[in-house]
Image (cartoon, rainbow, N blue to C red; front, side, top):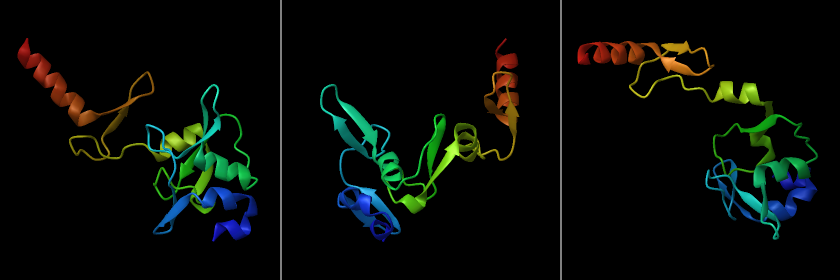
Length: 132
């Protein structure tokens, strides 16, 4: 277990439960589903539990970097399942590969940096032309 390798994590891991290979935070969760720890009561200030786990394990999270859950479980705080990435790399890993209508690998980059499905765009344009 990770608490042997990272002794400072003992108190944090005491508030978890095993779910397969993950250590799932049992305490408070943010609206997005991440585990959170109350750091200061006035004003209410929280730290995300997975970030606290990395900090206590001695792993630095540089400014402008995100923490990626390799396991895909937002409430997992197991250090081995967490990876510090640049924001750009983190967003690249979370990009959709299939659009909402199921078209695969048909992405077009818009001038503002957003992506849209080419097939859905064509269908939307056809519908707009018919409506005129």
